[in-house]
Image (cartoon, rainbow, N blue to C red):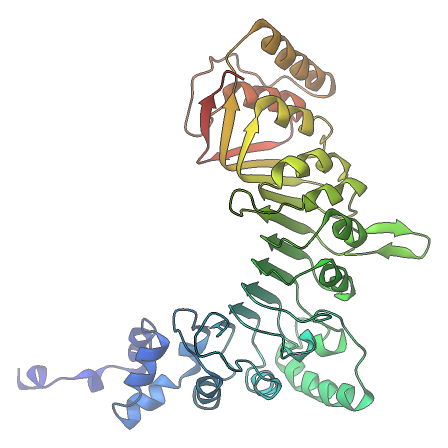
Length: 402
């Protein structure tokens, strides 16, 4: 009993203590490391620094970043989320070229970098970022012109990066992948949310990224339909141009009422070779549905946070015979009262679908269901697209007299 009364945390194995410390945030971990030498050694264990989120920590300066990098961050870091000083009263420099170089050398396994409210105009190129990045998220950031342009490296830099890539490849020899530094920018997923300085020029610069397969554009107001047309993957005499390796594209505009709308999704009307998944949101749903019929490789379509009419969906999906999945997320369906004219038009849409497939209608009544808010739409889509899976999530129905 005496041993039981005097037991402390020192009696626990280190693995259990590390599991307990994993529930703490960055601030709490740093404070915990000041208790004693043993706890300081435990806090520096790289299992605690795989995912570092500093977005809730306001006022993180470059000096704090240097302290974290020199004392805590290391080979275990996989995901890093930072909050800049763009909206802070302090202002000042945030990310520097020297810090990014040190991050690349000390954290060779970093895969995901997320920046919130960061001023990147002090960096002339994205090639300063760690070459091991596969996911880059920019939210509310400011970018310089030509930030995404990939320029050839000098022979000295290529030799230095080749030696670094050789050491990184020793631990990944079984994967058979080409080192990122030898094949250019290795980013596969790019997320841009509310980045006002992102323009058509930046979008066209992404065509030089050989591994980019997923692009998400949300509230990017300066991207136009013409810019999307020029960036689309098109087959020419010299081969494929544009974002030829892109498989997933998201375009969303969720701005305030009266905000400028570029209707960038109209640029999809020229077609996009290899694009298999498209997500449209907000005010871009209407223009995007008009152009989606030109995407011959499209397999999955997602519509969210918008208002739609039943006939609008049927007319747009009439030509999407190869569609395999159609999702409606938080969609407000506007349904007109039943009239002989409307019933005849819906019936004609269903007959057109039955000519190319099988009739999946079950003859049930039009009773509203949470998972099936528009039964008549489901039946008509099942006739038009017999091989397509339909998903309704948090959708509502309103009856309009118009």
